[in-house]
Each structure stands twice: as C-alpha cells, then as structure tokens.
Image (cartoon, rainbow, N blue to C red; front, side, top):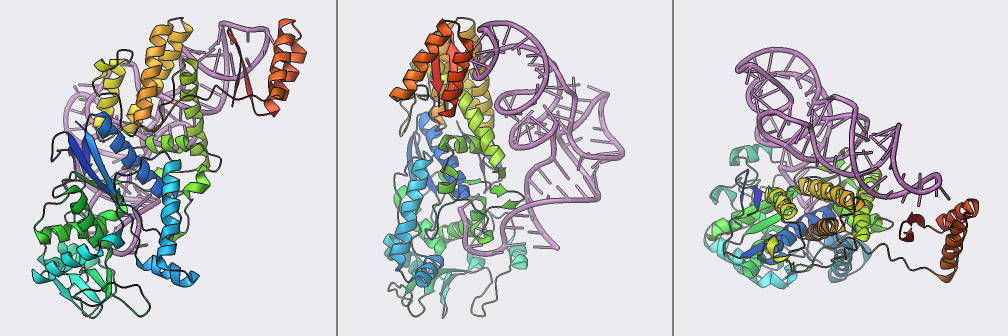
Length: 465
RNA sequence: GGCGGCGUGGCCGAGUGGUUUAGGCAGGGGCCUGCAAAGCCCCGUACCCCGGUUCGAAUCCGGGCGCCGCCUCCA
C-alpha cells in the first residue's frame, strides 16, 4: 500500500482509505487570473502521478480539482483591462486546461467552479455564524479561530506563535488578526451575490470545504496542493470543517516548490516561466521526467541545463522502446494492467515489484526511475547478447512502468520521410554497398543538416529525429 | 521573533549505521563500426565545518557556518 507523508501528523504513513478499493482525492486547483507557470505544472504532474499510481494499484480513483473563478485578483485584472470577471476567468481557465493537457495530465473527474457553489457556501457561513464560531463585521464575515479546536495543526504551530508572527494589518473589527474572511462584503462595482450578511462574495478558503465535501463526501481520503497552501489556506479549510463538526481530509499531501536560481518561483516575484513557454521546444515528457527525478516534497531547481539533461535521459528510454518495438501507451486514464504482474506474463515481475516498493515509499519516483534506467541498461545488454526474448520482456516492463508515471515511450523511430530524404538514404546505401565511404559520409552530413541522426545497424540504416 | 527544510563526486539527484557506497547528464579508457551513431563493459571513490556517541557515521547527538521556505496573495 502507498505510504505518503501526511502534513497533519508530520510522518509518512499508509494512505488509509475510507472505502476499501476506492480512493478520493481533492487537489487544490488554481485561481484563474493569469497564465499557469511551471510550478503549477509540477503540482499537476505530482498529483497526476499519484492518481495514476493509485489506479495502477487497482483502486478506483475519484479525482476532484477546483477552479477558483472569483477572487480579488480576477476582479482587479478585469477592472484594469475593462473586461468582465467571467471573461478573464474563462480565458485563463482555458489556458490551464490546455497547459495540463500538453503536460499529459489526466483531467480531473470533477472540476467544480467556485461561482457554482456560492449558495452552498452562504449556507455554510450562515451555519458557522449560528454556531457562534463566526461573526459579521462591516467588511464581511470572519471565522473566530480561537473557537476552533487544534487551529495550527497543519502549520504545526500553536495559536500563540501564529498570533505572534502574524503580519497582517490590524483590522480593529476582527477579534484576532488570524480570523479569516468567510464572506467579503462587496464594494461598489464589484461582483456580488446576495446573502443574509449582505451582498458580497465568498472568501477563498470556503469553496474548497464545500466542494470537496459535496463531491467526495465526509472524510475523503487525500487533500493536496503546494506547500504554500498549508497555511493559511488548508489550515482555514480544516478550521471550517472542524467548526462544522464534519470529518475532513484523512491525509494531507503537499508538494515542494519549483525554484529558479535561489528563489522560489511565484507570480508575486514575477520570476515565473509559463508552461506554454517551457513546452515551446521542450518535450513535455522531459519536464515530467525532470519533475519525477526529484522527490515531490523537495524543492526543485529548474534550469535550462536540467531540462536539457532530462531530455537526453528521456532519449535513452525512447531508444530502448524503439529498439524493442515497445509501443507507446498514451493517455492511460485507467491502467489496464492489474497491479499483480502475474496477469501480464511478458512483464518482468521483479521489476514491477521493485518499482512498487519505491513508489509505495512516499512516492519515491527518483528511486523508481533509477530502477527503470538500470533495467534499460540490462535490456540493452541482453539484446546485445542476442537474448531478444528476455530483452523485450524487460523493455516492455520499462515501457509499462514509465506509462504508470505518465511517460509514454517509443514511437520515435518511424519518422516520416519525404521523397527527397528517402532518395538520399537510398543513394547512401548504394554508396556504402560499393565502398564509397567519402560519398556516404557526405550524404550523412546532408541528412544531418536536415535534422536526422543516421544509425547504420546490422538490419539496415535508421534515421532518428 | 516563531516554525520547518536543506547543504552529497564536474552538474543534477537518491541514500539515514557497516555490504558491490542508486540513477541520469557530462568526462576518460575499451568493445562494436569502413568511419560514425546507438548500445555494452570499465573508471573518477563524494558526502559544509568542529566536537561527540559507536568496533564502525554521509547516515545518530551537540555546536557552528551557509542557503531556502512558511508565519501575507501564492502550486
């Protein structure tokens, strides 16, 4: 069984499912007010791999990820660009799905929008007020964190130390600087919904509570996002659920930052690279490989060199797949291969077991990948030694396990050649047959100029790329 | 001020008491090849500093130095 680090307890522990055989996961999506960057990409990839691996482990997975389509930043952007909020949100939501699809990330089963849940959020806020744990002010409705058991659990800090470190500006109407907005009273010109507390809009932290519980039910299995969401976002979600007396996430999973140079990448620092920019000229699988080569909780550096390095590593796996005609396995929405390798006789059980041991250990993708590369080397060696049967079984295993990680290998050897290029190949074959090496080298150079790498093998000449 | 993480060979990046000290990229040597490419084999013996525990520490403990993050919108 998969063991994952749990932010609430601070330890790696088995993912104990609410319903055996079923895994429910809620991954905080993003606020659609700007283009998604590669940090968002890492998060999407990490949870995509968790989802794929859970499915591979034989579980039926329900994956929910929200879209925050109403927020101060969306309002600001709409105002400054003279557009409506839905226009802005629509544009960047589309960019988000486009980017994640390009990254090979499986679409969540449900992608609820905050604006579709306002009524339910109002009901939650009203209930919290009724219970005496929330109170209205002139600017909105706030949750009284003093009234919540265990506030600070995820931040792993006491209420006192959180209060001491609070850097928010003092709002004299708030009972504690830590109290957070459940409802924001609309200012003139802002989009607003009616509520018992006056026209306004929901606070950010409320939507995830309402939508996760609605779609996944009380006590769902896994709640995830980037480390920055631990506090205050997830802390505040949990606070609302606790105040409501409802069982919330059983397991909290958070992925680490993407760094550029020595700083975290973030929109506020304006040092981000968009996913679209990254993928312009880079194989999306190379970025996935780069992401998976570091443990999901660690900070990870993305540099041009790291991307180039990952691309070369990916080539190695592609060549293996092509050499043994391993077919790509794209879009594994559900993994057709059962976790029990015995069902797939041409797979190498030991490799599958080693892979699972790594993955079960807090998603040790670096270790799992190391095993795949090692197996790739052994498969090539077997092939060189003439044991094609064994080599192919290993190669297919590598192909399958790569697919579990969302990396579809192979299919790069069947390059379409135009007539001109084909003629060069034919001419070169003839030159080689007659021992005209200088002409053959000349033609190889010509082919190289067209972007092809020429490989002369015992079974003929192959062009790559 | 509070809380947390990190410091590994040229680069990236695993590894938490001892064995063959992952894996990738780069580099050197070799096999193969007309020459290459690809592939395979071999090689570089690293763990911030200072103490300590231990038969034995990159791995545990203490101290120091450096870097990063959270406590505020943020994946």
